Each structure stands twice: as C-alpha cells, then as structure tokens.
Length: 256
Ligand SMILES: [Zn+2]
Image (cartoon, rainbow, N blue to C red; front, side):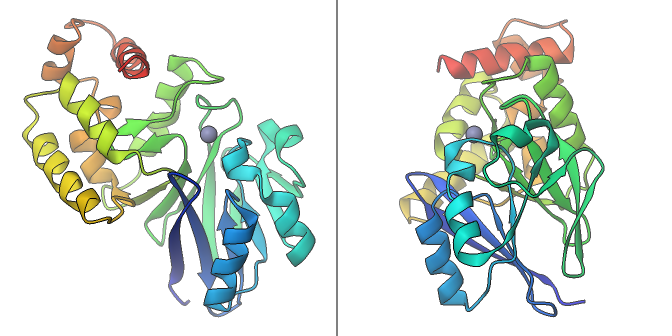
C-alpha cells in the first residue's frame, strides 16, 4: 500500500485546504471545499484528478466549493448524515463509526457536534492522520455555534482517545491568537510557554503551524486540559466538573 499523500495549502484568509492522494489507485479527495478555483489549481499542479470530497461540516468556507467541483470533476461527495440537508451535492452520508475508503486507505468517521450540529471528523488511523475541520485547532477549539459545551466536550473526548502521534489537520491557522488566550488562562504551563514562542517564530517566517500533534495538544491546549490546576485556579473553578471547566474556558475565549 502506498503512503497516503497529503497536500496542504493556505486558502481564503486563514483556511487550509487539503488534498489526499492514493498513488496506487489514483483516488484523490479534497477535505472540504473552501475555494473551488484554488482547489482546481492545486489539483492541476499536482496532476491529480479529484474523485472525492470529504466534508466536515456545512459552513461556506468548508462546503462552498462542492457543487462547482462536482460539476467539473464528477467527484463523489461524502458528508455528515446528521447535516445532509445542508451539504451541497452530498452523495454519501456518513456518521459515527462509518468507514470511508480512498483507494486502499480507510478513515473512520466520528460525529463531533458542537461547532455545528452535524460536524464530523475523519481519522486515518494507519496513516496517523486526522482531519478535524473546525472541531479542534492548535491550542484551540471551534466556536459553539450550534451545540452545547457538553456536546463539544464529548466530541473532544473522542479525539483524545487517539494515539499521541496522531497528526491533526485542522481547517484554520488560528494558532498564534489561540496561544495568547491559552497563556492567559494557563500562565504557568512551561510546555505552552515554549510552544507559543515556537509558533511566534514560525508565523514571523510565514510558516504554517498546522498540522499539530495530539501529544502537543494534550500538553498545551486549554480546551483539553480541564484537569490543569493552573487553569482551574485562573478561572476560579477549583472543584468543578471537567465539563464546567471546559464551558467556562470556551466562554472566556469567546470574549477574549
Ligand atoms: Zn465552521
């Protein structure tokens, strides 16, 4: 089995586009469709033919290019069953536990409601890669537009079950502002201090900070760290349940 090729490119103001390619079969997927013209240009540069779109959720910067790409390539659109009505051109509706195949590569689907009610993520376990859309960001998580804190916390628990070495491909470059917030709520976290400095250097050099490793997120992402005594002290919830610490952290970020 050939390795899963992952081609990443910046698009729109702060999104990342992803093309996945299986050399043996030629199968090629776009994870979300922030911009059909840019995705078409990236496909042409690679010499790849689009066979699939894997949507994470319905927002326009994720599914807005679906119909144009389907019209020009005839690709198959895979998306969340729970939100099928809002995924333009959807052909295959998937949900928790379903497996999506791209050539010989297989991704398991997880329902991760919170940012939207039908958000899903794709975990390519053998490739140690996951496409997490707007559920998790480097040192951050998605805003709760359509879900409750309890739903989002439950969704993040699923990601936390994956191995440390999993690479998380999130959909936005929000890392530097996320780091500023993270430091405000967990100022004593040494790993976070060091990571924030690294991120500042990367961004100053125009480099991406995505993908991120799950191990790094466990160590530095305040939305995955409700057990942190530093965090609990800062937000004045020393003895609260984890989900309540998560909820307050998310609310503070909204106002940051
Ligand atoms: Zn979104």
